[in-house]
Amino acid sequence: MNWKTFAAMLARDAHVARRNAIQLFLQTFLQPLLFVFIFGRVMVGSGFLPASYKSLLLPGIIAISMVFTGIWAVAMPLIAEFQWTREIEDRLLAPIAVPWIAIEKVLPECCKPWWLGWL
Image (tube, rainbow, N blue to C red):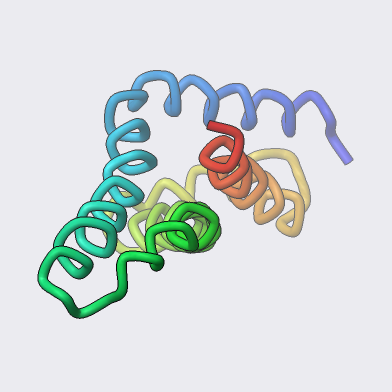
């Protein structure tokens, strides 16, 4: 296992995440706000849901947002790399075992839902 290569690949992903901070912020926070608006304001205001539903809304929104953000954050970049950008081919040329490349690609993306839960 070449730890220096693994750390360099993680550093590159961190740099890309910093560069795309606005997109990450919008992806992370707009989805829960949309859920709160639709289920807390529109559905309750129109009479489809009882007013007591608002007290159960926040924990459910946090859980749903963490799950959806986790799935979206891991799946969509991998789909893009396998189909359009072909970035994965460059990473496979690195002096590191293929399973560690997969771990390196999934590990940073799995941290995004944790940030959503903390914030």
